[in-house]
Length: 251
Image 1 (tube, one colour):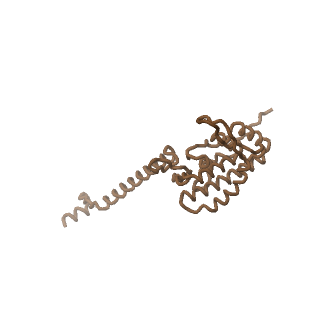
Image 2: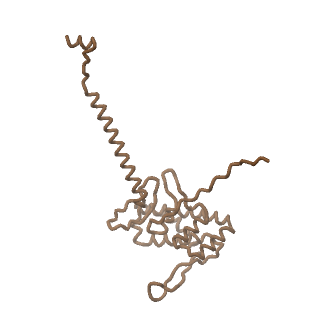
């Protein structure tokens, strides 16, 4: 019997890695996608486990909560898919608020939408006391107060972090990376307040390369233009080997 030669399914494409360069976890959440002129690109939160892993990487979710959410997400795929859609909506809302503030524009519309997410965030989280490692007494931290089946508790710490930033003085340091096809947000904590790029190694380097290429192209165009102008100004040298030019010389 002949073996079947059916084409194998394409290998799954992994999401690009998340980066934590913004100086605030709620800004890093907004930066889990690239905000290009063509639309969203490089989605890093394509499914619920990615969201849980992101929360654990940032420290917003402890290991125990992350394991419970992973398990619950597998048991309730529809809820997991709905939570990812909610994550994308929250990300859009936060970006609208932050971009308006960074540009000095009114943020009322975005704040209205963010206010709608606050009740669930407070419902899903509580305050807990634990021994402080660096000072005497005890420290207070936030912890999950929702059952594992409430998958949206993965988003509650992001809302809390956004509230903390919006109520702090650091909100005046909000910046938008001007890199082509980037649009990431960050806090400019540089001493002179002149940080321009989300990362110098990425957007900064690409912009320098682009400007260098543009300067080279302009230089080449300028040289070609000068060469054509010099050619047009050059007088024609008579060729006396021809009858016409020899007759002109004698005349």
